[in-house]
Image 1 (cartoon, rainbow, N blue to C red):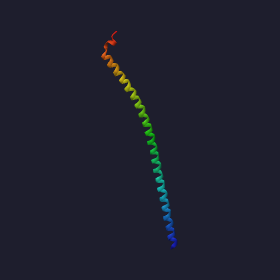
Image 2 (cartoon, helix red, strand yellow; image 1 turned 90 degrees about the vertical axis):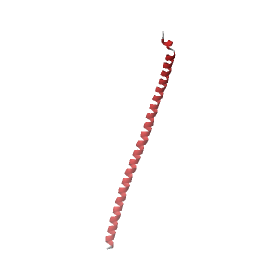
Image 3 (cartoon, rainbow, N blue to C red; image 1 turned 45 degrees about the vertical axis):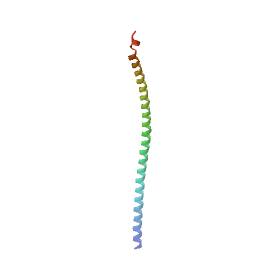
Image 4 (cartoon, one colour; image 1 turned 45 degrees about the horizontal axis):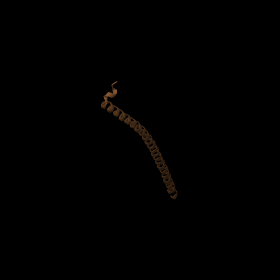
Length: 85
């Protein structure tokens, strides 16, 4: 009878080991996917910041050009004789 209990114990241990491996595999997959998601977000943030910085520079250039045009239009409006030949 002791032998039957030993077999049952061995089966229970085997089931526990199998469940442990399955849990470890699941945790490993989750960890890998979290790492991949984190890497993607870091890359996305860096790319987005770079693109926004480039866009900001272009907007600054356009704003300076617009200010120059506004001054030129204001000067032309205030002194129409500058354009009469």
